[in-house]
Image 1 (tube, rainbow, N blue to C red):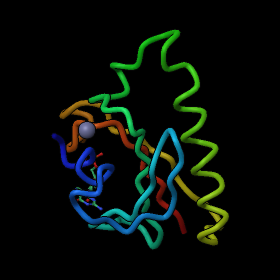
Image 2 (cartoon, rainbow, N blue to C red):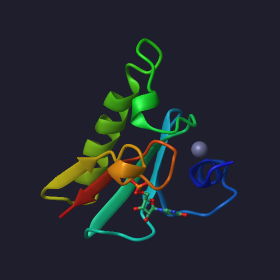
Image 3 (spheres, rainbow, N blue to C red):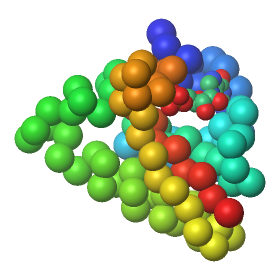
Image 4 (cartoon, protein in one colour):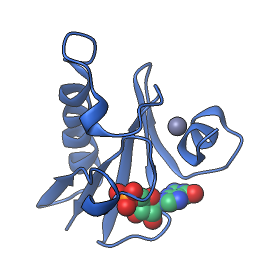
Length: 103
Ligand code: 5GP
Ligand code: ZN
């Protein structure tokens, strides 16, 4: 099981800030901004480029909706939403996650 699947199942602890039927969000262990959350679909999909048209059409929209709510909740005045895709794109954990970095 990948590290984010272990966080989703509760096998590894994380500072969780949100959970619903589709995704969870928790604090990045090595924050690169004053607010740094990871928003992670519960389904194990390695990377954004693996998303299937028809099957996953609403997934990213849901992650963005959650990010907007969390940014507000955390008091961010501005923020970045970022997906790293593939090793060359800077992706280290091969389970889709959206970075929310806020200031
Ligand atoms: P990537 O480079 O794959 O886009 O980002 C992976 C992120 O996951 C990194 O910012 C890293 O700090 C974070 N991360 C890696 N392992 C863990 C972990 O076990 N717990 C938490 N909370 N964050 C992690
Ligand atoms: Zn996984």
